[in-house]
Length: 132
Image 1 (tube, rainbow, N blue to C red):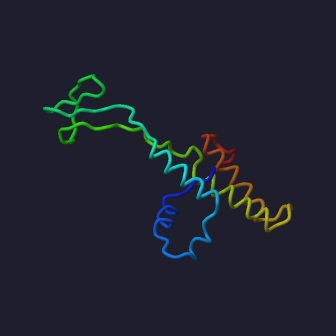
Image 2 (cartoon, rainbow, N blue to C red):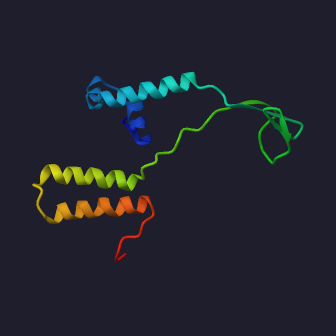
Image 3 (cartoon, helix red, strand yellow):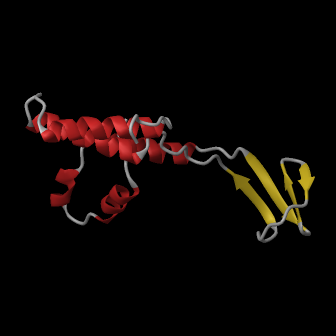
């Protein structure tokens, strides 16, 4: 599955000519279609009624501090946050680029790429690296 960043979505939303479409790959088009389809098919998970300073969510009334105007609101689930930290994604991309451009020998760039991936992976799971 392709992950589309907010910046990439903004770029895609602002493309103006057919020439720019060459920069879009099939994975992105498929991902955008899945996102659009999911948002069209989304069902509310609860209803919230605001009335006389009180809030009732699916039949359970409780007073909570809020600034919503009175009315009925449909509540939907939030999109899950990415599980892979951005630093690790960048490190792996750098590693792949170095691997493509350099033979698999102990060059400085190769070792730096491997070290970066290792460090980011350890930070992702909150493991300290020996010597740091």
